[in-house]
Image 1 (cartoon, rainbow, N blue to C red):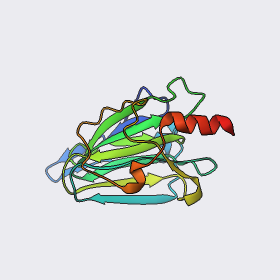
Image 2 (cartoon, rainbow, N blue to C red):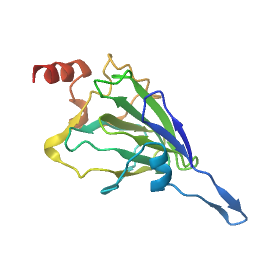
Image 3 (tube, rainbow, N blue to C red):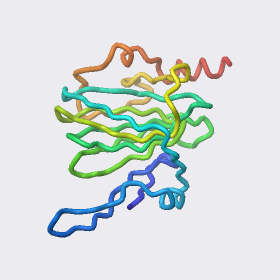
Image 4 (tube, one colour):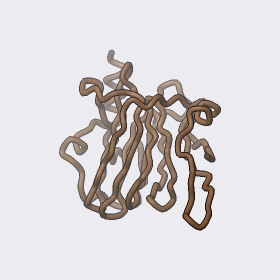
Length: 184
């Protein structure tokens, strides 16, 4: 695997090292030792699949609060999506910054999302599926989200979303969440 760290420390784009022959290719998409060599600890406790028939479906920006914070290894298994992460680690020099990566069924690229990052994606094709391994179990009381179109974050989505759930339309802004955090 080829690990490329993004501008957000601890978040990696992971490309497969393909071994090809007349049958196609073989590649590892996860190896505990290789991930650990890059400082990535991902004990997969849950595997999720998201199927999205409509091009322009936006899911996000989701995260879980500690002690249920989760890291994710995301890949697109059918179609194409634009995957976005936002650094929510207050002590990080990239706090509040985002990175977007195109994941497609054809490029086999993966994105490692560390704990305490918001995560979401926009489907670029109809019938797009995403699969991800998650390091923590879903905990409804720890579930939170950021406003996907918050001007303070200025995420450059490649297209205007056509379908956003009612829940994802009402997530608070980054500044609203910061105010709540500081009031605690």
